[in-house]
Image 1 (cartoon, rainbow, N blue to C red):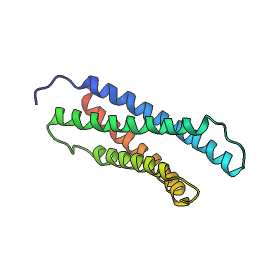
Image 2 (image 1 turned 180 degrees about the vertical axis):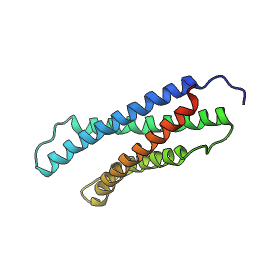
Image 3 (image 1 turned 30 degrees about the horizontal axis):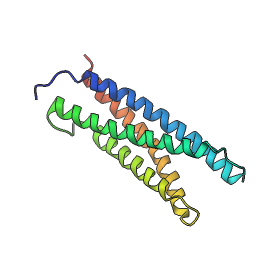
Image 4 (image 1 turned 120 degrees about the vertical axis):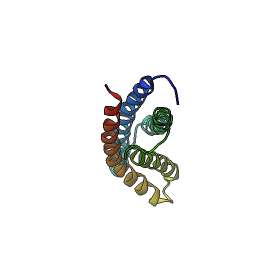
Length: 145
């Protein structure tokens, strides 16, 4: 394809990835606060759960934006996908984030499996974020002169 430079697209991706990691960290902190309040049998602040949900929505949105940028940019630049292990790493992150978000909607006292699934997926997501960040850095090196 004869398209203009995709440098602007990669800048959006870099910002989105940074914001995704920030949202993930904030989710870990607010989730830890929810866990502490529940296990210590303390009254949790009324703003904590909505903040956690809102951050989750932001993370899902950013990850889907990153997916679309990666697909459009790679196909636009190379004409096809699969140039590195960044694609499977990215798809793993997308799958984990979406499954974690789904499991969050299932959390209820009558479904104790949902909370443990949600927490386990987010622990695995940390490793996947590390992998996709590393592989993404390798991809970015191809575009820099």
